[in-house]
Amino acid sequence: MSLAHTAAEYMLSDALLPNRKGPRLKGLRLELPLDRMVKFVAVGFPLLLVSLAFAQEFSSGSPISCFCPSNFSIRQAAYVDSSCWDSLVHHEQDESGQSKTKSLWPHKALPYSLLALAVAMYLPVLLWQYAAVPALSSDLLFIISELDKSYNRAIRLVQHMLKIRQESSDTDVFWDELEKARKERYFEFPLLERYLACKQRSHSLVATYLLRNALLLLFTSATYLYLGHFHLDVFFQEEFSCSIKTGLLHDETHIPDLITCRLTSLSVFQIVSLASIAIYTLLVPVILYNLTRLCRWDKRLLSIYEMLPAFDLLSRKMLGCPINDLNVILLFLRANISELVSFSWLSVLCTLKDTATQKHNIDTVVDFMTLLAGLEPSKPKHLTHGMCDENP
Image (cartoon, rainbow, N blue to C red; front, side, top):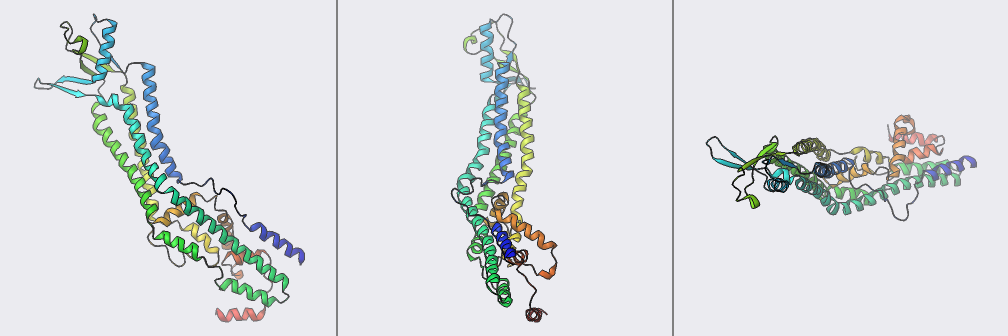
């Protein structure tokens, strides 16, 4: 039997999670994957469009081309292009013959409006970074540490029972300890459970998360209004009439009052406008989905930890309205599941538990590891009858 006990000791020692020392959890994800994707697209896409606009300007030169009179010198033609681009005002007459003007400034403000959009979309990220990340990081570090420690406590309990089995020749002593481990709540988790219950009554993280996504929706709506009100008005206007009797040409009588200019950058302007509408329209459902996740519990993670002795956050029905900090923490625990080493072990045990026969009476990780370690001998008849009397 010594060889079997040695093998059981090795198995239980391998099941223990190593203690983490030094800088812990450097790879902790403090943004959900969908939030990170929204950030990169919402902030990076306007910057990409800015580079496209500047690249077009450097490659094709002046963004407008004016049709100057044939007697204009090269210097005068260059002045006309510069003057019309600076003013960017279209002069026309209405049906009654009255002269009116229309500003085409969105063409000139395009790169700056895209930069402003990128800055606006980055503000919710800064809000989350400074208002929520410090507290969230502390919460995750504590909860991950406590969940892993609670798993190790269960394994050490089985090691203790193995030691009792080795040192005692009376199987009744072992069975008494095993029944106590199953029935008595030796391993209460008041600190962890009360901490999670406290987070269920806290709303600072969820308020920051809601504010972050609400600001994204607000800035997206403002982008729609800006594009619809200003860009749509000049979207199809490629030519405009420019007044050139200003500055050096103010006193010239042989030149016309208005000349026609063509916007050579209109295609880029149209592509940028349409691409912005398309991309931010696709982001809206993603943002709304992030908000809807706060309306339901992700109970799978906590249900896995029901395998731990006396950990019954779900069975006590402590989970009420999901819009609270605990639900946000559960979402981030799911995103950091690779840092929660005990989760993979308990997931395997839960899977094996579901496929095991009911005669082993497997309820917790203690029951399962006791069985795997070969600690369950044939149950004494008087204990078997006693249990039958307790559970008719």
